[in-house]
Length: 592
View (spheres, rainbow, N blue to C red):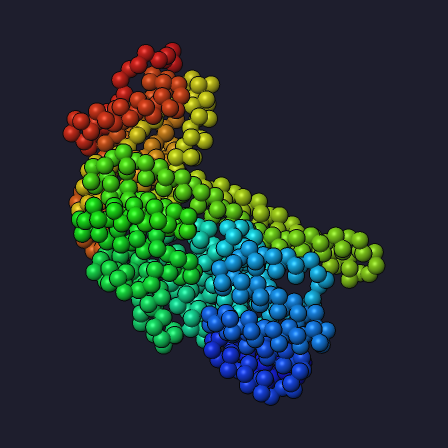
């Protein structure tokens, strides 16, 4: 493309609309071919843009046919850049045809050649295609790296729609990897950029992504507000756009307790989710939840099981995890406890896998490794040339400060990541992993200082009945309120953890069983006075039962103390609930 054509004309307009409206881009490319000289380099770019538009509209055979004259003209004009961009487009067409392995082969061949002299928008296309290839091949970290490179290229290009596309891709990728905070940040930026640039398709995609992200993070009000934004602003979207994001809209209505409208969206829309991934499992999960809300537990379980079997290798881990939870809850409601336990364990394994993916994605987002590597290279160059000029010395100082800031940022990141993996996302308390990391050290300290230590196992009373009558969202609110009461009434040196489900553990250093019993009695009294409201309705009063076991009277290992506290908790349940029992003496040593 000539400098004149890049400044104005149909070719420029075709480039500008390539990521906004492929139909308009196709029209502009045809106009360009009518105006430029036949056989010119500009004609080659006209054919290339026409092939890109056809490919984005799904006309793969037409795109392949149009790509041939573009390649021939680029060869005639000895345009290395043009020939490489033809290869990039061929790889994109292979992806559209469902052949990521072929796309990878093409990318490797391009990368093996000399630098083709890509411009920023070329680099955006190249990294965008490589990211999609890596994602289809399950190479999540490579996909994320290329999406970040595409973002940088879009910024350099000045193309607002390419920039909005890059932001939306990053939001979707982080959501797939369960890095919900970065997914939210990039999707919100994408929504803003899409509205400013008039990219109507991206407005729908980014908003639908935010519904899914907010729901996964427990921000139900925000999810509902985003759905309302989509439905109240059709002028910002393409005609018929909402049908393509029916599942996120159904999710928002389900979160708001509007089961009828949720089911209506599920019945009338597409199964695809906001990131263009086949979301059959997510659709089935939400449909099963709606069935359970209506008491159709057998139908819900059958739907969940069928979908898990049929989609076991073709769904995102997050979608499968949610579906497993639904199948487990339905099985439990049908008194099939072995199946419920097995499904809960499978879902927990997927959750741990997702946390691992999310931590790595979070690290990639904050660390921005590609920027970090560039800073290191520039620093090495500045060190070699620092004696050449004063300007180089100033550059070196700036780069050193940048590197120090990156190192400090990474250290802070590691601390944040560790805290994230040790927190329960629903209640904000520490989780079971934190308990098993910290409690043994406290026990050893108690042994060395010859001090007692008590472990308390707490379980909400009649929690299943609350879920069955008020819904799981109400149950989540009650769990959060108990967590707040425990956190507010515990001592600073106590450890308060969510152990799993409706069970909590409190580790109390320096307290024997009698004093721990007094402290938990105060917590029980405080919680019993709570009046919890959910959706403008007061929930039934809920109590808890607890079992207390103390070192060294009831054991000298965390497992022993938890086991004996569990038996005491069981006695508390048998004796009427809303009470606390201390473990029976087991013959272990005393502190005397």
